Image (cartoon, rainbow, N blue to C red; front, side, top):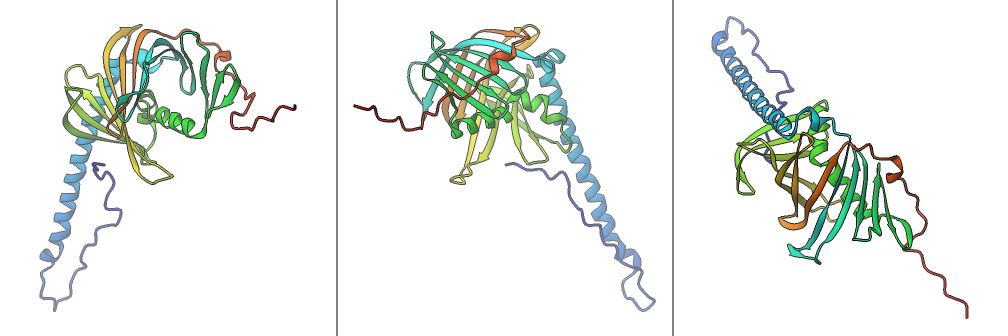
Length: 288
């Protein structure tokens, strides 16, 4: 990742001690290099502060463009639309209708198919899959993928990350994302989690979000991107009705919304579930 060092020189500068009368080096020459180094260090700190201030200003403008206080204080959302999955960048099926109910920060329910007979529920760090067979725990890999995307989601970054102690902000200049002129900003936590945002230079709305992570199994570094488009104003909040997700450069998912509502006061029961069967358990043979 492009890095700007925001905390350097933890070791104190070593200044030369005053020499005795037999020294051939004048004291003024002996002390001049450390003074120059201190000056250069102060300049670099000033540049880093200006860079961070520019990044913070762009993030503040993005939050205001999304709706300001209305965006920061939204409690839940209810949406419907159609979602499409891709494999290696190629369509995987014809898509499926969905209804989603989300309560910030960690309650999520997605109902799939026209009959709404396939449901996924995420509550805290638990995931459940409900079908005609019953309720099963979401498989560990799918759960890990979901929890990672939630941790790096735009809402979590703009509503939680930027308020954490030790957060670092970096302005990384102009860029092009989704064929739009953007300003690029990277946000890094004290745990070295980082997200890069591409903010529209004209509207200041987020156009793209990018982050990378290392797979604990094969140790490979993977990149996930999300592109936001077709913004519409809903209850004072600018909402992207088209969201495209990429995995290592290949399109992996697209969602197109047909409706969106905020702050309906979603019931707790929507996010409650308990496991009733194990899909991996062996079915006992029927007795003849």
